[in-house]
Length: 240
Image (cartoon, rainbow, N blue to C red; front, side, top):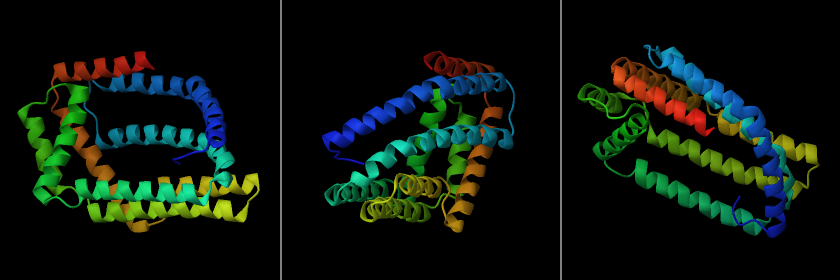
């Protein structure tokens, strides 16, 4: 939530520091172990299911951390004023417009090129320079994928409205602490797992296609690229 009062900001910073300390002591060791497991996997070929399991493991830890933040937000949520909600609503609308300008409004070939560029940048940050076969694989994947910007935008808008309505409901009803926390936990659950069955099926399909692409690209990787991947993961482990 943007535009906090000084009292709200002080309370939230204090609560989030507690979450930060918990994360350092409890979650970072888990992250380090995940990075070590990935380093052990890196020299070998991997299946799409193995890639998806890695993605699921990371998302699970993110969810645990977000759930840990709910009590902190619940303490501030009842004090959020109408003017702050209005400010936040405008910020969300601006974010939606920016997303549409990047992912919905340009011609399809331009959007595909942008997606391919993002994939290349992300993968080269792990593997180093990709070869022609790997680049060709990415460019072949993009136009065949199930990515649907219209469906994604609908989900973005649903989430934004859900956030605003939840905070307004918490403020208007002057809920007890436990009820406020329950509202925010439910909001987080809906954000992580959409109530829209069509979107859930879509997200699962895109996830599976991405895991397939990663598996195929890794099979094409050279020993030098796999060593680059190991070194990158090791640097993340050290930085943790």
